Structure formats: C-alpha cells, structure tokens
Length: 127
Image 1 (cartoon, helix red, strand yellow):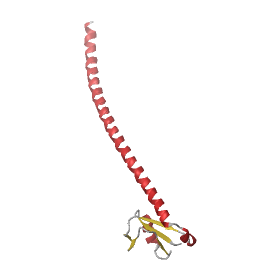
Image 2 (cartoon, helix red, strand yellow; image 1 turned 90 degrees about the horizontal axis):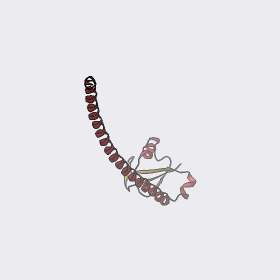
Image 3 (cartoon, rainbow, N blue to C red; image 1 turned 90 degrees about the vertical axis):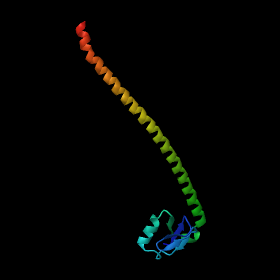
Image 4 (cartoon, rainbow, N blue to C red; image 1 turned 60 degrees about the vertical axis):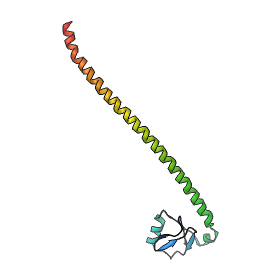
C-alpha cells in the first residue's frame, strides 16, 4: 500500500528526510515498519496508507485543507477549555478561601460554646 505523508510545516525532518507541506506519495517499500511507526506517531506529520487505486483519486490538497480545518477547530476548542479550566480554578480558590474562613469561624464558635458550657454547672449551683 502506498504511503502519503504531509508535513504540517514544510521541510519538517523525520527519518532522515525532509517532508513537504504538499502531500507526497511513497511506495510501500520506501520505509521500514519501525520508520512507519515513527512517522505515524509524529504529530507534525499526517501519514495515510492508501490502496494503489485510491492514490490517483485522492485530492491531497482537499484532504489537507480538511485536516487543517479540523485542527483549527480542535485548537479553538482547546483554548475554550483552557479558559473554562482557568475560570473554574479561580472559583475553586474563592470557595477554598470561604471554606477556610468558615472553619476558622466554626473553631471560634466551638471555643465560645465550650466556655459557656463550662460556666453552666457553676451557674446551676448558684440557683
């Protein structure tokens, strides 16, 4: 099966060669299995295995444009999620501060209650 490789950045180097932003088709014996695994894992490359008949039918530029559009959508979503996480972390910090203040208030009230309870028997004896 021929291999089509497109680099996200023109001239990106991997496995001893520069890869182009324009899709390049290589015969299936061009890369070893280990090299293919390395290329497929590389986030800067788009690696597609195609059947011999499909090579002529593939609109590489269209596929690349679609992939870049998908990447742009993913990046926008990631940015939105980072903003949401930041907002949630700020809210968590505020709630943690409130929780600490409530714990301190509770400790003070418990101390006051204990002091009042300690006075109770003395007050009861006088009656």
